[in-house]
Length: 144
Image 1: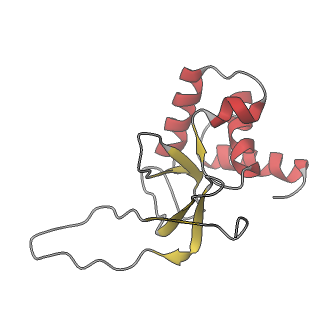
Image 2: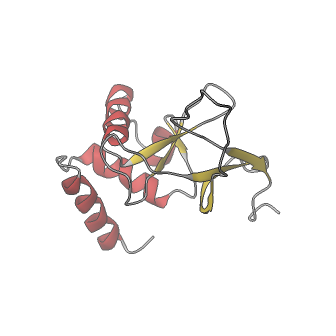
Image 3: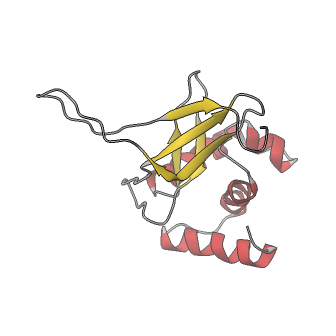
């Protein structure tokens, strides 16, 4: 994760590279992502920040981060939406998160398994895949 100074510098760099102004809300949300051990839901920002964020501002900030390739959505089996930081190869409107997501049934964390690629899928003739999302559920190494 790094020191507070390193995190602040990284946040500033991410926002500048994405041509976004450095605001308190954007900085705080990115800081929460960097300090989390997994993916975050919209409601986590209020819980983790220890302060009340305006829901609309959080939603707009998350949408901006999605559009700019800073974060990506993680599929869930329910109606919730989880988000995680993208790696450096993502860019505006182009996510390159070709990895598996793992949902722990014990602690509830959803983790990006960056070292595990999504398996190649062979579709029948006439089909074209635009996106493949894989979520594996089980028990994480911390809970095991």
